[in-house]
Image (tube, rainbow, N blue to C red; front, side, top):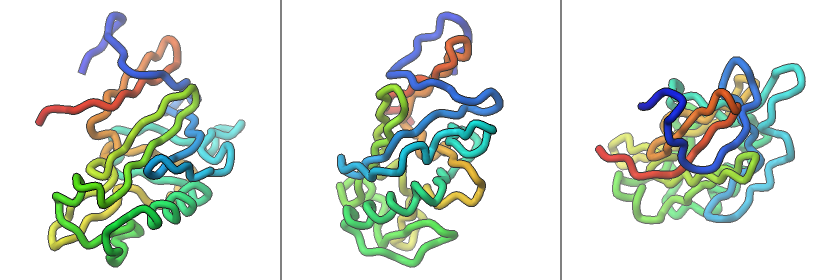
Length: 177
């Protein structure tokens, strides 16, 4: 972790939209390169400060409002090559082992943010192995009135905050450890 005026910011920026949290505009999501075509402004903060999507390193799961979650889930189910298991706490689960997260049996998602920033989220960041041959999504439907891009999906992602310019930079990376 680095602070100060001379920190190197990696990746492409997306504008920050809120003053109280790290709000960003998510334009769409892709599953294995196929766009979900989420309705426009689904993940934008409203004029009265409601809704939107925040980056939150203190919230493990990713929460997506219904208008974005359900089309994403439908497309995701079409691309997954593992057998569906019983949901756990509202999250999709599949029969699988830890190694399946790296075998191409679950799709990669790409989050398309305002400004041309595309963030790839591989299965090892969008699913977690829970033992007993079960892997479960780390994203689910939000009932919070807003969406949250949680810390588990930020694994192997370099995130930089330029508070003066009100931009957030993100780049996929390979963290050690």
